[in-house]
Image 1 (cartoon, rainbow, N blue to C red):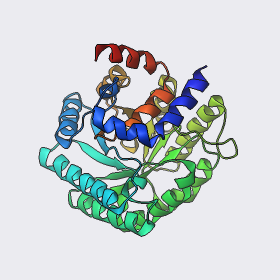
Image 2: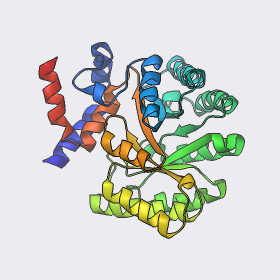
Image 3: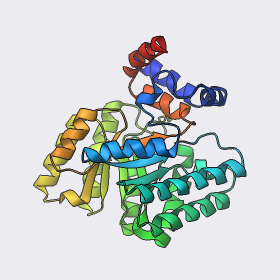
Length: 306
């Protein structure tokens, strides 16, 4: 039943008609639990609240289903305004984004121009931009773009790799020469068994494997998980191998396991929260429901409150 619900929500996440309608609804049906708001000031307020608790952030202006050059350029402009707002407010946050949001599916050169515009601003503020990994169809081109931008912008750009893909362990080896700052995740898209582990237990094992490999290579790891068993494993592993806390951080999603987030920050670990905002919240929200069907009960309660 849980797998069925997951597949339903992943299917719904790609429905452009519902996404368009959601922009008119605003943050409804419990979405405000997982999305910080619609505007940049909303996002900055959320980051301020986190910073006061000793937690840092990464802001993501949600954008999906980009179909025109104008939309892609507008998304890039919004990312630039976000970086400027972070600097102006003096909050502790970097930026996350998706390449399709910047026009990758329209024209790779358009996407690259937008990325360079954004990274020029990030570099001027001595900030950092994380390129999110999307579905498998975009995996190779995303890695290729990251390599090119890493050569140009160095420490100001990072990448995400997904544990559920068979190829990820090899990708970590291939990327080592770039000394990459990687966010390591399990993966939230539905992929065929030809390219991804179909069983959760295998994904979990590979997640631990790639975390350990990346850390032992001496590279920076952003371990993105709400799984306490994984967190405890990383704590023990880094202590055993004398890996300094400056070489890794934990990351969690806005609105999920907030008590654990605060606990890790109090223990002296870098705890970063992924803070999404914007009116293009629908696809992101559906994927959160797919990851944790238990959240559906929360949504149902919210519907009756509205």
